[in-house]
Image (cartoon, one colour):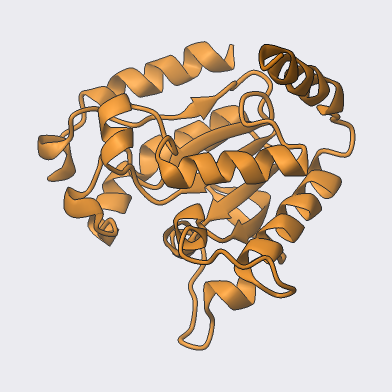
Amino acid sequence: MKKSCLEIVQSKCEKCTACALGKTRKNIVFSDGNPETAKIVLIGEAPGEMEDESGKPFVGRAGQLLNDFLAEAGISRDEDLYIINTVKCRPPQNRVPEDSEKAECRKFLNAQVDIINPRAIILCGATALKSFVNLDKKQTISKVRGQWMTINVDGKDYKAMTIFHPSYLLRNHSLDEGSPRRLMKEDLKNIKDTILPDVNHFEDNKVEFINKELATV
């Protein structure tokens, strides 16, 4: 049911040229994940070059790093998450999307969240955070990440948490106490324990690990 509703939204999105991004994209980047099983919506910034080519969010180096963090936390990208961006088309040179561009795309984002009706929303990076929360000059993503908050999407309140964008972590390799990567691990564990306490992908991960090991024998 959710999938068919989202297909209608996607068909409208594919025809959209409301802002300049619609004239320069190769593909819209609508979503990833299983809408029928997803319990969390993860909202990123905008498609990059590889996403524009593939039509799928978080497939580049940052996406691979995100996959690693999710797997370690016990969160399944394929089953637990429905992944979207604040805009569905790649901004030129991967610049930050403008407020007007996000505004034109907001109806699609709102529809996706409405249809999924998640247990929680993950705001991945500063652009996603600022799309829902008005920050003062003293507030940075480093100060608000990891904290549960309530955000409103199309008139409905949702539990939400902000995490670092994985592209930021590509430049920060330390795993020391208090480092961005260590904080990312802690935030995702918090999300898993709070939102998905009844979900355990250990057996699936164990089988996948065994299959990889056998492949090397």
